[in-house]
Image (cartoon, rainbow, N blue to C red):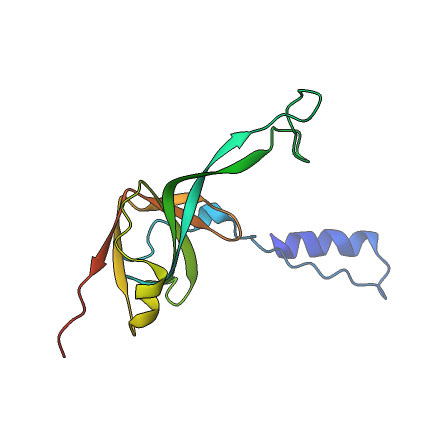
Length: 150
């Protein structure tokens, strides 16, 4: 197909001008399976996930975001936790991401993470929640992996 395009381009251009085409297939997010990021992760940090609410301005109108949808504001209510992790397996090894788990069960805090050399974990029901740049995940549950004896 590339040769056909070049031959046709030569018909419309003088001999001293050469159009050089290269046809590339652009990769898109759907070309990858982002659900396959392994089973074991290095836990780096935990942050609370807060409930959100829509608010009204002084005139009683919903406060809108730049995209025209109602803007969401964090409340003081914790509804889950966001775990910043490093992927340890597969083709995305050594990349970092964030995995959100709904619920108040948090097996470790940042102070305990900092005391340890390494904190390994796994997630139940792991799946991408937002595929873009960056990619975020959600899971049903987090479980700490016991360190292996040396």
